[in-house]
Structure formats: C-alpha cells, structure tokens
Image (cartoon, rainbow, N blue to C red; front, side):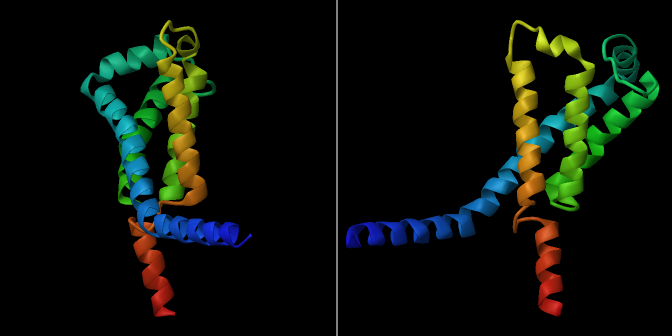
Length: 156
C-alpha cells in the first residue's frame, strides 16, 4: 500500500509543478494561436472590403442583421478581440466575443457543413473549444489580467 501512496504523492507533486510552471505557458500559447486565426480572417476581410460585403450579402446568411452591419461587426470583432486575448486583457469577455463570432460563422455559412474537406468545420469546433477553455480557465498568470489581479491582491 505504501508504493501507491508514494506514487500518488509523486504524481500530485509533479502535477502541481506542471500546473504552476507549464499551465501559464500553455494558456498563453492557446490564447495566441486562437487569436491569430481570427486576426488573419479580419485582416483578409479589410484588404478587400467590397468582396467582404459581397460575401455577407450573397454567401453568408447572418440572421437578424443587415449584411453591412454583420460585415462590420464580424470584421471588427475579428480585429479587436484577438488583441485583447493576446494581451490577456479582459480575456474572458474577449473569448466570449470571439466565441460568438465563431458561432455566427458556423451558423451563417451552411456551406461549411457540406464541404468535401471536413477540416473547415472542425477548425471552428477546435477554436470554439479553445475559446471556452479561456472563458473557464482564464488567461493565466502570463497576462495583463493576471498582472492586475496580483497587483490588486498585494495592495490590499
């Protein structure tokens, strides 16, 4: 029985060290990776705004919004929210916002579900999962949110 107790204690210690040192790096990597995906899409939309408006008018089926407003909000979200996520500032609201942008992309572009290459829809699922992880876990210590949280806890 002692060997199991020793193994459990060792596993607990290794897990604690990994959580202490590797978790902040992993959360930073996830934040940067998923933010970059949306930032690239936003930059692409801005490069040819006429094409973007055409896509929102003819291809995408965004409910309740005019194509112009949907293009503006979607592109704005893809350009601004990733910057907050990378910096780790207002990370949870930024991740929620990008999750909504991602969800709207899946809902409004039904062609995603019928493409021969399933990677297109799977990417959206992966990004959605990473964004939900950010909402639940927060940005970690390597973020402005973490810095401000530590600074405010030390001042009280």
